[in-house]
Image (cartoon, rainbow, N blue to C red):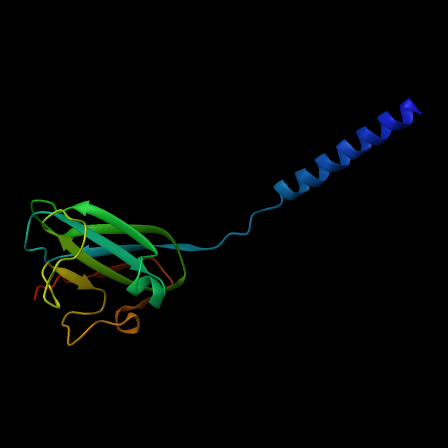
Length: 150
């Protein structure tokens, strides 16, 4: 009886190990990912920080971004931000420059009080929409985003 119980436990352990091995040894499903490089060519105020948000739907365009990066404004030249490992899809970029270090976009009344920018938008005639600012990412891509001031 003792031998039979030991055999059953050993057999269970071996079968469990094989099942576990076959699950971990199976090739992982790979999803192709892409790199998005955002170039900001016209930073006129050489101070503060740039907050760059990447949206992948309307909710992340008007609320919390899908991905974000914050960087100090360099003394000169264009600013480049890279987002790696992005799945194929529709994205939009939104940027604001925090000039006073309070980590939020300041307003003067209803108008932005600090520089800002959106992908695909160089002039505003009202609040931007995700559909206006979005673009397809189906290959590695470089886009320029112009900063604006009101």
